[in-house]
Length: 163
Image (tube, rainbow, N blue to C red):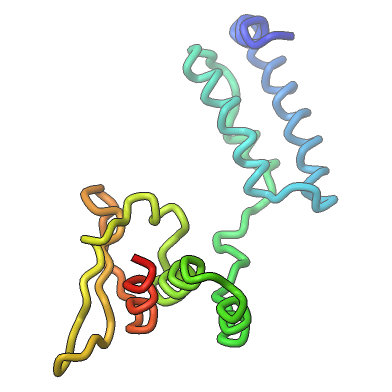
């Protein structure tokens, strides 16, 4: 059935649509239990279906009931900061560009997407007694999410070498 047909039938028979959605999400829940997908992925599968039906004024679907069958989600990531040994290994066999990126990300905690908006003017050294001890990094400059992060002197020097 195409999308328009589904919306039309859902408008006429919301209980039918609710059962179809429940069946689909329960099948996907089995994939979660088999560890094929994560619970967050399943929640993200529900969102566009709900949006589609709500934007087409389909009423009569009990979204609260549908949410009850959804598995609980983890509210934190499983990632971790690299150990010093892992950083040393990565730095030992990489080019200058990668070293600058790695040291900057490891010391500041910025995400990979933050690099798109960075330029030379967003890095400002912090000096004490004429020596660079760290640097200030303006992340997402000009955006509502703008914030300041700090990097080590070592990361700053690598960035300067690369630039």
